[in-house]
Image (cartoon, rainbow, N blue to C red):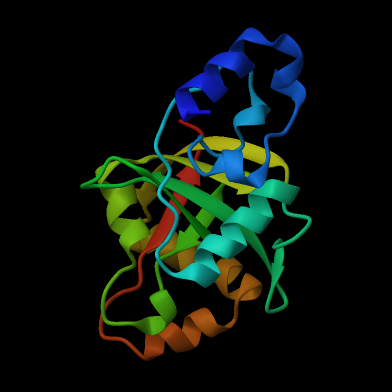
Length: 181
């Protein structure tokens, strides 16, 4: 059954809205499509790096029961829209929040370049953050230097290695603030 037919069938079946689709069904639907009654068609392209694609699929198919904890830290799944492709891209990231907003650290382990999801966010600031079963439609923006100074300690409390990543690269690692519009 094609994606279009799957979505059409689900939209026509009121009872299906409360049901969570299979992990396979999540490949071509927006993040947590079962969270609302209006479903939008979008094309999801899994990460070409298999460990990332597997983590995302496990997280989404279990609402974070499998995949919330990674290397001792809590994670979220960030959904962005590709800057060039327009396709949905999903990335597991360390969960950094102050209870009002989420922060995404574009560290890429201290690599010399920003991660692709950062470029996607700059081009298309409407993002989705899935925190276990909670799905948040948010707007992303790069923190100002003052905001980064204010919130950086929240990030390093969640993942202390962020300080080492910043020390290992010449670029200023962006802190992205994701909040309600």
